[in-house]
Length: 405
Image: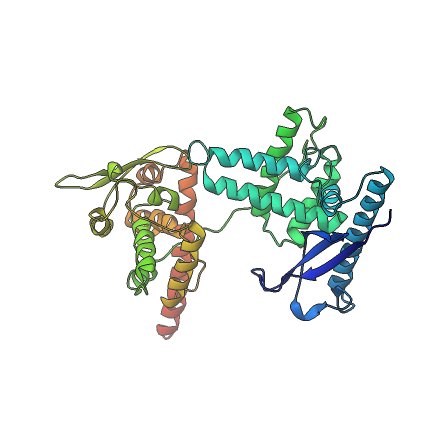
């Protein structure tokens, strides 16, 4: 029996991606029945040839995208004829599922990864953290995009993930995804965890990460200087959401608490005494106990929200990503020309608020909840380098002023 089998590519005009490009969708139709799926490819609207259903131009990017679209077309046609040879009546969903794996994705590394993420999601809020789930999702999406970009298929069998695949993925993260050295190490560590689970389940016999070195490099810890902190405190919030984000950020600058610790802060964590208020809590990341005496500024911020706070949390904050966007915008309005995130508050507490005023490094380490004082010593070295740089600038100006001496 002859069937009307068609494959059509089109762009999703009504839902542009974050980078402004439009997703390319594949539509399969057989005898009036159709289904669609994402090709995980994207293109600028002006470059899409709607009549030929491909990307215009002769650039390398256009050639590569069109080649991948051809690969999808050939694979779908092959699956169509395979189903015909099995004497089954082909449907659009059967062809799509045969291509992308359908529900039976147990042999693919991406499918195995996604099932891990679904199980992980069930434990978020009890013994797992949301940020860790987001990390696994990012890595899984990057892995699928890498496989599709380099091989033209949405997944590969677990037993085909060897050292060469790991090396290729490493290089792809550095070149195509533009990830930093430390981000690559973070992503590959997450993938290694998935591979070790697959080995434990008997799905893989050999560890492709065996002897593979995951390199990292010291990261820069940005913090606010005294004048920058003062300017940040004087920024005018445009609405209530900005005000609570700014207050929480300033609160972090004077307590050293991270975003997750501040967003989870409750009345039970506040010790109220006539002479000294303090915070006694447990760090979300390391589960170490911390006790931070409160200065007047964070105490005033607490009093502002304690009366309105519900029984659960004092600060009702949006996501960390959203807070970072707001803080970045406020830093620009305060004429601060450096990379500022919510975590900058913690670095500021370690340097500008404590170590620069002579607070012993052992006390700073305890308030920050560090498990190793060597971590705290990094801030001391950073502060020393900043002092030396500022003194060098002052020295140049002094030498010019007193050049006649």
